[in-house]
Length: 191
Image (cartoon, rainbow, N blue to C red; front, side):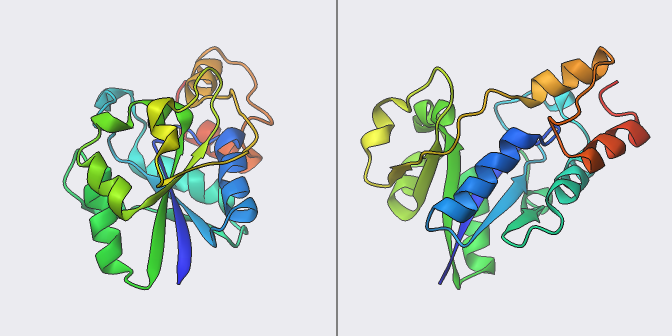
């Protein structure tokens, strides 16, 4: 059974930090593939701060094209919003019965994971691979049997940093693939 890591995020925009995490998970853990699950709306984030979901999906596609074990998923685009991870997992399990799904999250997210809808069911039925985040340690959840702490290279880069840089007219070269930069410039995103 193929093991698929689900990397949920706004990817607003995607950057090398996301790509390094996904590549590490796909190549240095027991996962066969990593799917970038582009969230239309995170229940904990303000909706108006998000770029268009199709633009964000396209930027992820551009960033990972020609990478065999990294894929994109727009599964949440067709689910009721705001989308909760438990509902997405249930939907994916029904749609792909031959795949085993694993969640990928940062230590910062793990620290507040107990605020998620049905987090106990997620812990019971799924495994979670956690990547390090500066200033966080995963809290009390890190000892749970369903949690695997990984040695993913630590990244301090954020999409917020990129959006601010673009708004200020600064270069974002090397922070995200050139194809993504071209797309952002062509569409006038975040300016």
